[in-house]
Image 1: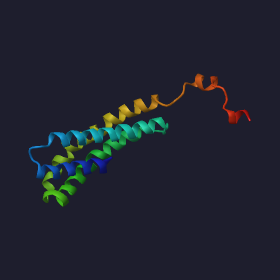
Image 2: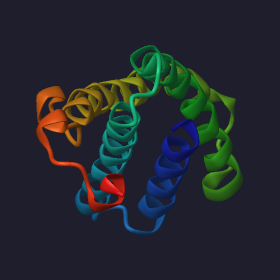
Image 3: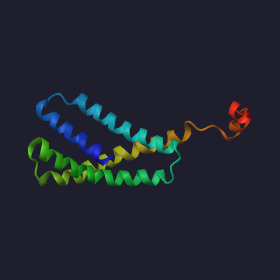
Image 4: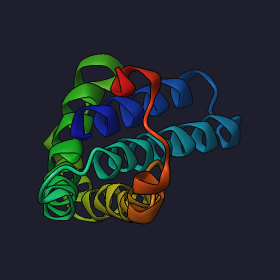
Amino acid sequence: MALVHGAAVTVLAKYSVYHPTDQAFPISVALALLVGAAALWSAVDAWLDRPDRGRNWFIAALVTGPLAGVLYVIGRAVFVDQTGTSELRGALTGGAAFSALLVLVPAGLGLFVGARIGHAAPGRRAAQPPSEEARG
């Protein structure tokens, strides 16, 4: 998730260099993609009934925040405008907190939804007639 967040913010920074007044739509699309990725991935984890999925997503959010900030500063320095280490402080404070929440909140929603879809109720599975292959 940190790579996805760092890449998204770097691409937005590169886009803002060439289109400084037209940023509302690309920012909205990037936020929707980031939220969707976390929600979908966590929903699949819950649907597959992965062990310790809640703790794993909490740790992923904590790691994504600072790592995405560092990757953003590196990506901006390399691909956009030779940003120096002066941007690192902002990326590791406010930017890291926002990235962590941008993983944690949709992941919580995805875990909630994913655990409730695709599973048959215990009584319904036993009440279904056996398939043709099972009958022999």
